[in-house]
Image 1 (tube, rainbow, N blue to C red):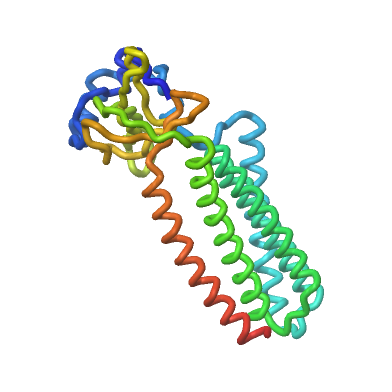
Image 2 (image 1 turned 90 degrees about the horizontal axis):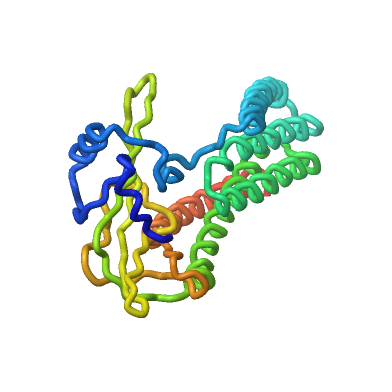
Length: 287
């Protein structure tokens, strides 16, 4: 995105050439300047649920449904524990569990960006449907078999989510941010925000992006990431570096994806291990 020169008038933005500064120094500057929350980078302060009237009502209803079906689930569990085969109790348990997954998806998905929200929503709703269908059609000998099947389903869909997210990141690099450009890092912009928690008091958060510059027909072009990193310091040093931009929009800059790719690969490996473990348990109790 284009670097907005007007951010120097926004007291919540700190522009400097310090790659790794001290957190307490930035908090001090933030407090001294009495931050204004109406600056050009206001959107980077918060990216959680937007609490419009409908969103707030949906959140309350989803949470209430989660509690109700959690109670129903626990009550049905007591009756199901002594039955073999479970029969319609299995379908009732799976219905309650499926509705809990839907409520969880409704609550959690809006907290993410648009692309991640779509992936999480699709996988969550399909997972809920598969859980219910398996519970409706399956004939389980005991509760342990029911648990093993559902654990396997959940682990599989978590793996699918991480695979889809990795594909999205790599696809963006190949299709949207498909031009590698030599630029100069000339500084950093930090956007600070203070939030209050009754238990933890005031907490300070920061989003940061390097400021890049290159010359286009003798005109300096200044850019920063399309999405700021949720850190206090940057891993991009001052001086010459490379960025990935779009061939259709010179102001689009992809944030560093190496950490996100590594994190998703590690989580994918961990949950793949859990999937294999759940399959082993499934083979012992069911197959």
